[in-house]
Image (tube, rainbow, N blue to C red):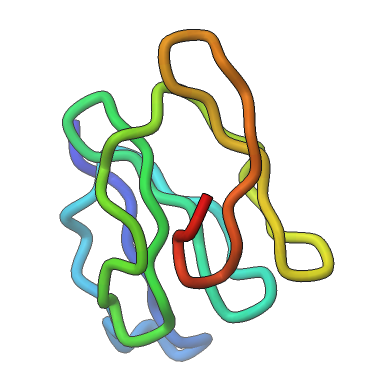
Length: 82
């Protein structure tokens, strides 16, 4: 079921509902789930990371977010760099 996208308070679609899930924006990016993998998008809907993460901490804090691939955790910056 696809249910993740973004709308304005008056219900105007800003980013199409193409994601399986989506978290709120923090520091200008949002975590989204697509085909069982997580990635991050900016407020224009542009991917800032590939959809390669098995698990994530949904928000960024001081420019970094925790991500997991194959049960190994690390951090990425706002540009997707590990």
